[in-house]
Length: 338
Image (cartoon, rainbow, N blue to C red):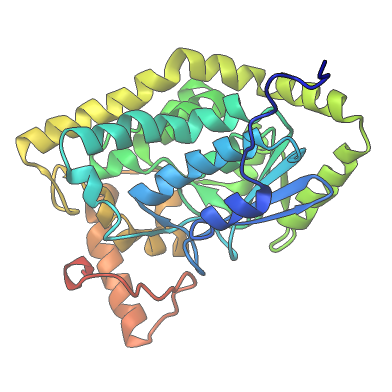
């Protein structure tokens, strides 16, 4: 009689295989069970798009299925977090009803929940500088940022309901009143303010955050695998309870409000009632290169942002000032320019 089981373990893709699958959106490296995920688009900074949205949640799920991934570090290519948007990366959001439903009902939610419910091992988020859609960095057990990091929940200024999970995290990390304030006014919050509020774990000098994450990961490796994995579950438990209660309400609220604007025909560029996702990069370099959004917000600051951003870009293009976040937007159509 055979002593073999009736069926063997299901063969899943290897690290090298799914590393190749996701190479347009992330660089993956693994050393002694420690994985570093570096978000990107092709060979440059990650460009916000329907495709990157979906890839982030898919990769997180893939990482969770590989038991050789013992500790995971999430960061971003270069000296800052995501600042750019792919002007051509949102066409499937326009396809009603099914494609938009899949993007907003599944992808928007999975981007958040997979980080907390799928990853059972310790995680470290590293922001090497300012940027938006900082989800994966702030959903980790430990979050490290550089001294120049600043973030915000930018939705309301563009007429969107801030329901993609970042507003929910602000309420959780900053406290209800302070979280509501930053969520509802789009004011930027700096690295030191985040540390003082308890929203991040450490602030490092520029260029040292990723190295610090590896120091912590190697420290954890001295613990027994089982114990550090159980420890990570305790670290994730407050977020699990939060997301179970409120995440889908937040994401569906943003989706419903957006569909109202689609139905009303008032979803468009910066001059519309609600700004379409594909236009966001036209002001983002300006938002992070200036201190414009670090002060208390007013109607004039909100509504005057596109004009001030255009004036700033005119100075960049004339060589009068330098854009610290300059990147070759090689795929931008003519209509995308100011």
